[in-house]
Amino acid sequence: MNIQITQPEVEALINQRLESGAFHNAEDVILHALQTSPVPMPSDAPPTKSIEELFAPLRGLHLSFSRNPSTGRPVEL
Image (cartoon, rainbow, N blue to C red; front, side, top):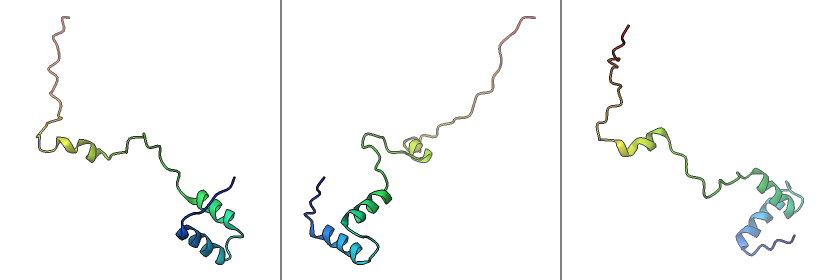
């Protein structure tokens, strides 16, 4: 596989890393960058929301989520 660097700023960053002495070649720089970068989430996955964000559209509606006490049902003994 051949990779062509076309952006001068990317080449400059790779050269900076090489000059630091921490890497032997550009391949080492790229390998380290890929190993330490987070794996992106699939774009089709819905973003996660907090419980507050989930119920935000219901604010101001004065909804009551309390239970009605059960009156039970008549039981013939």
